Image (tube, rainbow, N blue to C red; front, side):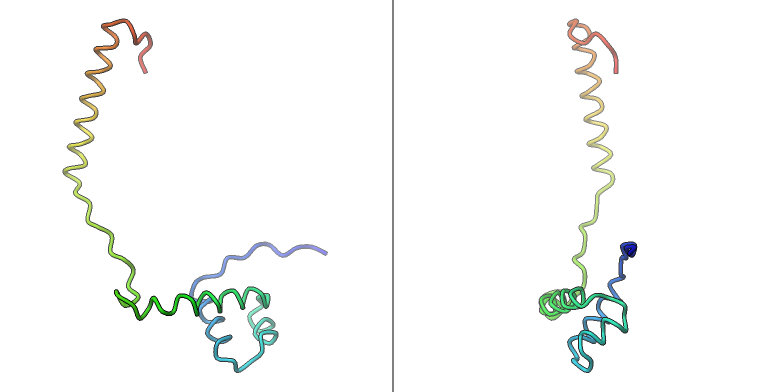
Length: 103
């Protein structure tokens, strides 16, 4: 008996199957045959949906958390500062004879 290759389901598909399981119109065996997914997987998705449903109605309203804006100028300044510091230390070490080979 050959094994089926591993499948990755999209979140929309998982939500559709989990909502169908929560509705209770059909049994898990029927849903399993309809969507070609194992019963245990449907049960897992159902419990994940039930556990995460409270987050939709909480603060933020289900919107993904906003990522803070990155200040590119300050990052470039920091990179320049660190590069200058590395070059200075490399020169000082080579003059002292502690750095024999260049990178």
